[in-house]
Amino acid sequence: MTTYKELKGTNIQAVSSDPSNPIEGQVWYNTTSNVTKGRAATAAGAWSSGGNMNTARVDMGGAGIYTAALAFGGENASGTPVAITESYDGSSWTEVNDLNTARYGMGGAGTQTAALCFGGTPPETAATESWNGTNWTEVNDLTDARQIGGSNGTQTSALLYGGTPTPGGTANTESWNGTNWTEVNNLNTARWRLGGTGADNTAALAIGGRAGSWYDNVESWNGTNWTEVNDLNTARIALGASGPSTSALAFGGELAPGTVAQNNEEWNGTNWTEITDLSTARNRPVSAGPGTSASLAAGGSATGSPSYTAATEEWLGAGAGVTRTFTDS
Image (cartoon, rainbow, N blue to C red; front, side):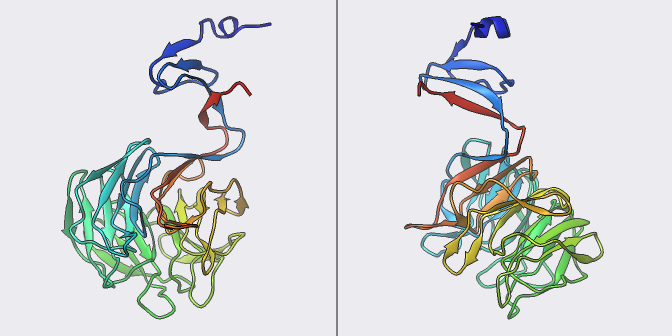
């Protein structure tokens, strides 16, 4: 029988904490948790538990990637808008400096150290704030005050589309150039509570949402116009989304009034494919990540009571390295 030392040239190491960057096939014994662990590659994408947020809430703005994320604002379990900002390092959330204006239903864009927060409620606002890694600063307002639209981009190149207060939702789209917002061409379908994702204000996806009914519609933005592309497999609203417009992830949401979704779909630039579901059904989460290879879903409203959750899940796509714990069963 071949031993681990014969395969790898070393004995299984005893360490007090997990290696920060293990390689595939590496095995170690964690003396703190008293378990043996190893590094493997995922055969298919999977969600795993991350660190809980400090404050359970819904309808936050978000920025960053799954190991360096920012979540700001939102509505807490008491129904109160908050200004709280939390930063995620891949394992735990830390409270940092608050927004200037407490709100929920805002748009978000950028990174953990250079983010943008815009719109939100109550009441519907056009306020925009810029984050420099330490503080939020008020900058130029949106053209139209609104909430719960789709958004994406960077601190200097962002997009906001759809939302309310227009009855039935609005189709308005605004583009941010780092200084000002400018109205550009509208969505084909007016809607609100849609998912949004994309690299900047030249490439985006508007996903799902509702007006009179729940939509599976998806539209792609090329910097000038919106074009209808292939639909989601499952119509839903209030979903999370991450990634570029050619390789995105859409997860969670609401399937019908009071029915929260676990659904997770992957976009390859042409079609949506149903893949591994979220572990916890939820709507109105904050999302961050490069998309199909890795992502994050945090907070939102789950089933049960209390429904507002602080739970975080991290997505790693097929072929990604994951740490496994060995058991004797």
